[in-house]
Length: 401
Ligand SMILES: [Zn+2]
Image 1: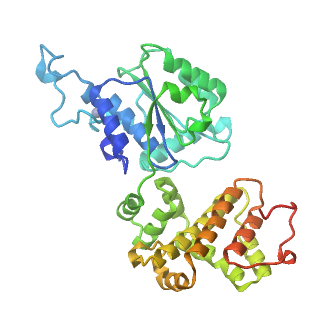
Image 2 (image 1 turned 90 degrees about the horizontal axis):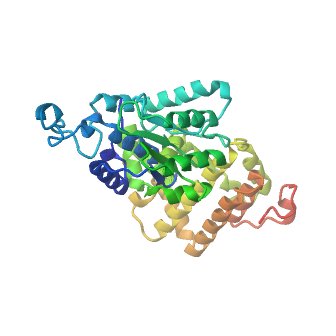
Image 3 (image 1 turned 180 degrees about the vertical axis):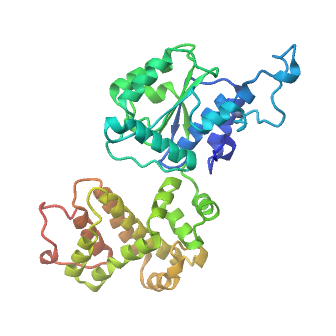
């Protein structure tokens, strides 16, 4: 059973220092809102904060409180004043997510009658792996039945601790009436509940929520931090770790998700898609693009990744033109090719191609057919000028942006 403590938050020195300061001071706001991109450690920090807040060793009165029996009341020597001790019974229960004063809500999808087992399975996965990646379906939400139950409990005093902590992961996945109930609780004076909300999409929260919370910002993780984590903690080989870190956009969760696939193979497939376009063979390009029949419901994510592989490749070309050494190249296992292509491609042309891909990423958010978007982008990245007759049939007139 491993948990991550506040002092161990990966690549988040700012929030780590701030939250430990709050814990050491012992004065808590009614609600905290952890903001930042998905997968940078907000949820991990929220649970670490909750454990520190509930820790009994830390909350035991010091010598001045235990006037008549100092030896029994003094905090354990060596226990941190600003973090969970990790050893007391409160810490152990909180780590197991069984502390009665720790409520942990997260979005769930699927049928109501399977709710209990879905929640239990997710909690078990999190106990086994503190870096467990939460992956939601589009419709996943903080379930009404769970918040109703929680609100009933909030009417009573906490069971064991001085305060109760409610952690709500991805709090942007709630309904209007849930937010009103939440606000009421946050604004209640003298409340014995501390709310810790996390969100990667603050714009989806009603504006009243952020304004009532103490906000804590989480930055994207440095590429090097992710690479080191993958190599040292997950055992990923260096060249794959480097590629994953570069693709992660500063999100450890994203890097871990990508690792479940075969990133190097996927990259080679993505780059190979360009070959028919470079040969000036639209029919073959269309066939290749359609052959990636992984599109569909999860398809936009696959497509995004394909485009990102091309972006990383082009950025390597720019780096190579600036004389970057081998270790600065993301795709350094294909260094010779990069150097060759860099030599014959002007920076302006590389930037033009990067713009096409940027545009493509924006387009796939919309209703455009992924295969057509990909066809269009690749043909333009290749510099190919296919005439109108070469384009595949398409339902809309202006799909080629
Ligand atoms: Zn403790």
